[in-house]
Length: 499
Image (cartoon, rainbow, N blue to C red; front, side, top):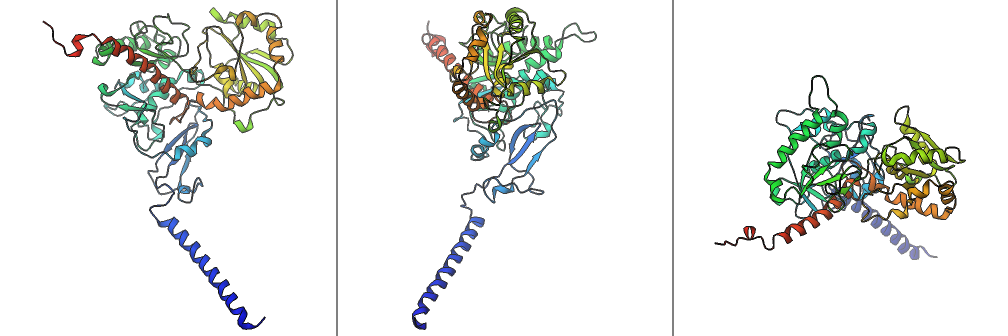
């Protein structure tokens, strides 16, 4: 081929090469400097507080570390992990899965007109809530600064944690007005009670019972009883209470012994409870009240590391108090039936002596975990089993289950009547007859729904906090319907003047 015929080909090759280089260079330039970049301009800081995820907008741009998330711009996120404390061991399940969706949320305060629920929260003194945790704010300061992790008082650990529901709900309401805290806008706090769907009472009733129900020194009335008396007096004098007789008020009394002195006087309010075991039907019932899950005390098993059917050598697991009163006497009967059976672990256990870690290991190594009625129909053992991906076997005829209006528990739990469970051989024959493929289906479902039983701050879409607010919304709709129907012929409220 002649020299002349090769010149156009070389020229064309060089021209294409230079063009591609310029195109790449211009693309890089645009991505780094254009304000219309696809990468969001707001970058969040991931802070792990005592094992609980908290997302904040960066307040200090110096000393930022590179952490690759979405792009080069997002890689400027600064991840700081504060020292964990044994008092607040709150592992976050499925955080990595939800992080992507949370990043898409804007750092802006929730719009009260768009939220599912608008909640007015009383400005009760700290002695009713965070003061019970030992928190002391500045003069006239009612709430801790929840945008700064180090200033959030930790909740006591151990079994106290299982009834910490009021703590998480209160934190969520406080966070709803802070633009830099990323959370779902299911609920937003409003400061005008007339614009609220719900009136929230921030009393840490379970903690008050656990820590302050005994007399100390020269006390004639316990702190717990004193606080309940003061709360009743406060609420009964409020216009908000008088407006609907307290029916739109939300009180968390998750520990079955909390609010013992005040519950009858405040029984028209909506309660958040563990079950109805110690409540008369006229005070607490499914028509008006919400059942919330215990906060589990064992570590949540990573779904990707959850032991399979073959990797769980224990068929049936139970560790806990065996001798109980009331409906819990069945535990003793089952103990004598099952204690010597092969592949069954049925022993006494408590939180002492590394008990929680032992329970975590045992449940994570078992195919089925017993949830037997104790002093009350429910216990945190059910939610420990769910967190361990161990198929729960529920033997509690009076149990009420959280979020059952949206969750079909038969997809991931085995229910056995107490009268059948105590028959010799019945329970083992039932469980041994469950085929591997059925167990795997239930196990897979457990991994799908486990996040709905996680308490964390900030709350995440579909977690326990978010689910409780949705359940409250369902109850409020019913209350509003009854309230409006009652006003149909109430002339005093319709503006009609009669002589």
